[in-house]
Amino acid sequence: NGQLTLKELPYIIQWDAGKCTRCGQCTTVCPQKAIEPSVMVQRVVTSEGPMPLPQSVRQVGQGIMVGQIL
Image (cartoon, rainbow, N blue to C red; front, side):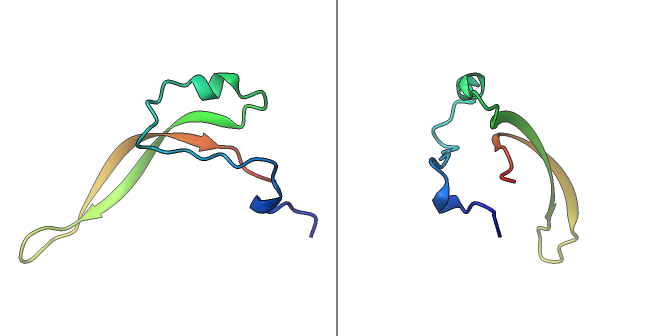
């Protein structure tokens, strides 16, 4: 099929959200601009109580976006 699999890549980016301080240093040194800081907005549906009514809540989180493999 001509597409690379994850095992065929020379390196795999491993990002640990618990250790990352979101300083942005990794994004500034990447020569291919394959890693970028990002802000993600999620829609979360929650329900609490004995007769819960679903509530839609938006949450904003930080993360590292890894470029797509084409």
